[in-house]
Image 1 (cartoon, rainbow, N blue to C red):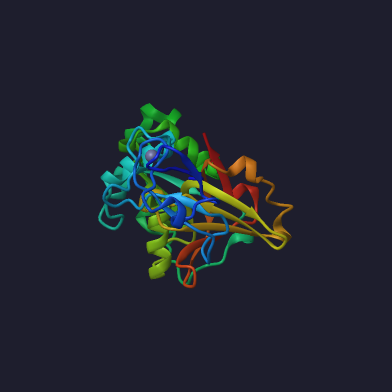
Image 2 (cartoon, rainbow, N blue to C red; image 1 turned 90 degrees about the vertical axis):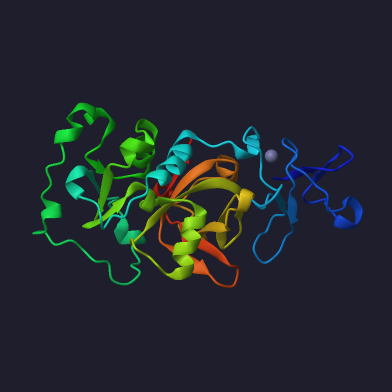
Length: 280
Ligand SMILES: [Zn+2]
């Protein structure tokens, strides 16, 4: 958030805010949740206000700052259906192959990825039976973030919980591939890269384009962990989204994640437009 409300009813911009003048009692402009100021520092280039996700510092459900797009609501509900991929009977699942086809550019494997061999029964599935009546909602193959967005749009959390994704022979579930920035933080910090790459969803707070690098910073309200995507200037010709197109929007970002110890945040390198999808 760029503006906050003072106890006297006036608003203050994150650039103008000075605790000596305005004090520490500052609130969300819309729902009056307590917010705190994050100044320009090691972690960010733009000052902002945020809720911490603790005590009174959480946006109310009606607050526009909490507004979510349908696909993200679906993903959050999907987490209630969490199952262990190793304990499921894969024949109960609809298996969809995931192949983005450009991993030659973005592929930077994090060590060994255990693959299911071609002879494994998991490869020979007869999964169409129970899903024959809803073929229209399901795709054969996921080749882009747009297909993922469509899948999340057209299916209920319950339906999505019955989908297994096959990424180069590695089986996973929708909510293990498409994760939020807190999950990305845990995975990257612990180096528990159970997939070669991930899709992170979130809201873009700010975009900072410099001569050598461009940063896409995710929103950090209600306790969300810092997450930044970056694009080197050499790739600007492949990544053409602008600050105006991205700020305030909910997006999906695909790629390898890594932990930045120095700034205590998760990072993802973006090279191509295809690695980002704008959710409406
Ligand atoms: Zn609010």
